[in-house]
Length: 406
Image (cartoon, rainbow, N blue to C red; front, side):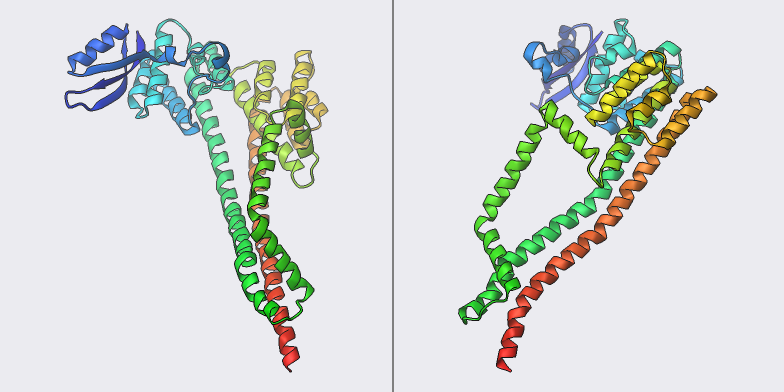
């Protein structure tokens, strides 16, 4: 039995879309006719995702939002823990979903399971929705015989990652808005206020103070060349984004991030925290350490750190210890390395990796919160200083005029 997406018209001419299961497209069309609907199209969901040749590089099926992935995972874990077979659990999840893309995806996975494939193999049909980390963890759970527990861990991991990302976005929102408003106010003052006020003194033939003349020159530059400056900035940004597609340039840029004052420690913490948390969920789910290290290295975004952990993977595969291999990279904090070494010596590496990832994640969130709190007063002080300078530039000719009158 396979899943098919359909489009049909009812007796009132209203179009309907949905997903139904049957052995063939003909059976789906017959089901629609039995309801009094006229079929417009019936397509196998799995077949729609497969592309070959050049297009395969750009299409690997639909993706899922993190919240949807966490919900599906949690529902599957609950149903499997209740004793339902995997295919029945997948069918129940599809029926509970209100999103067409989720329903279609889950039913397509169910059809692969009914054909005799494992759940992990069925998930390979949708690599964008279920990344390698997810599929490897599910495979380990299936082989170990405790898929429900592994799925619960995956749901916890997905939800924690989503919560961390949401927290970072919300924390960064206020400074970004404040910065945009500050720039708008300054540009408005320089474009509209300064020229109108200073023009009065220019017409009277009064010589302008140096600060006032400077503000007037800046105002003219913004007025006359503001559009070109904006276009130049946009082109520079687009060129930078395009240059990042070059592996050599991207590697050098990532190296710069690891040495730049103020952000190097944050870059290291963010990448190592993600690596350790991924490693923790994999090893605790039964994935062998070397395989877990190889998969976890793929979630590291900084290329020099990624190269370091890949080298560490090679050392561990040759018989080295995890703590010594990670120490050699030079990217992990002493506290993380000490906790990992302690876990290795005590035989509780899985538990220690989980504690390490939790500690590192908490430290990272505290760092982000501190940076945001530091940015707010700095932005206010900077904006206040710029506005004060503009006001001073406007007041200076007025004060000089008053002195001349006296």
